[in-house]
Length: 187
Picture 1: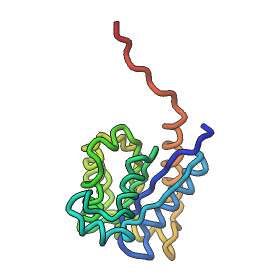
Picture 2: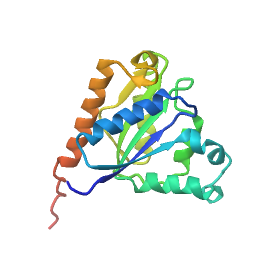
Picture 3: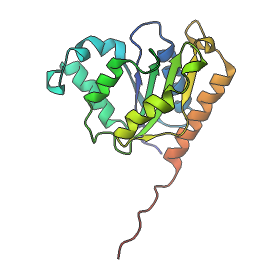
Picture 4: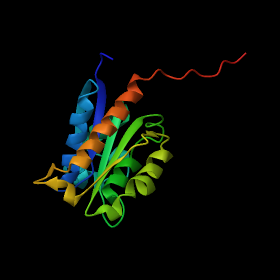
């Protein structure tokens, strides 16, 4: 593959510094070891206020509309979220409420989350996968969860997490290296 993939990574945190952003950036770096990418990071905190004030896509300022279009036109999405009260933030849900209903069909999505402890690790499977299932997106079988203990000074410091990030990147890259399955022939 010589043409860079259009990677859009959404960091669903609202504050800085952010462990979610640190995990997002670590995933991008690991993916770049395997795939030619043109990465773009969308930080929810940067668009949360104008996003939250819009009841429909027509009410969005141009800056936020451009971010939605970037998500819809991505070749690959990385969606990372902090866990708030057992789920992803409402602003992140609102962002995806404004995405075109068919815009993510078959789009590969690597899911990641950060939380205060391991108790929230299932947010990927119980909260994020159903959201992207609605869109008929192709969520990758591997997700990456990190707790507060996996970071030092807002950098990934836990070797087990670093290994998981590398594994997720390798498995994501394999998806783009595999031949596209042929559809059944019709007579």
